[in-house]
Amino acid sequence: MTYPRQPKAGDAFLKIAVAGKGGSGKTTISGTLARALARAGHSVVALDCDTNPMLGISLGVGPEETDRLVAARQNLETGDTEHQTSIAGIVDTFGADAPDDVRLVVVSRIDRADPGCP
View 1 (cartoon, one colour):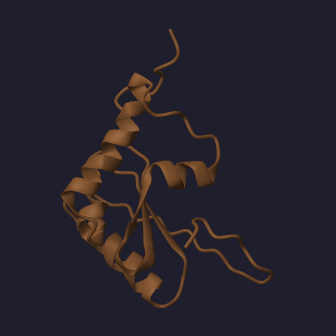
View 2 (cartoon, one colour; view 1 turned 90 degrees about the horizontal axis):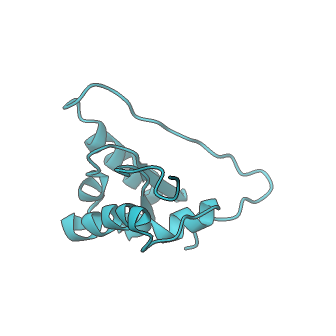
């Protein structure tokens, strides 16, 4: 499946943000909700915006793939990865397919946000 899929006439889109204090189960709830929605036939792109991105573990992509996505984000600082200017570019470059047709995208934990600026 291509993410994000192109909307069709009459499609409804839902954005869900899960927030709360540390240790309250946000990642577990987010992973469960993403997989349940995907199993119900919805196109799901799960964004991990946490400073300690572990949604990949909850979604079942495993620690190695989660670490690879985090490293891809960090490579922006060294110039080894190009900045992406479109949603599709971000989803493709910083994303991975998870079980149940969920697309995981790590969009956090950039240690230096201004690598090209003096």
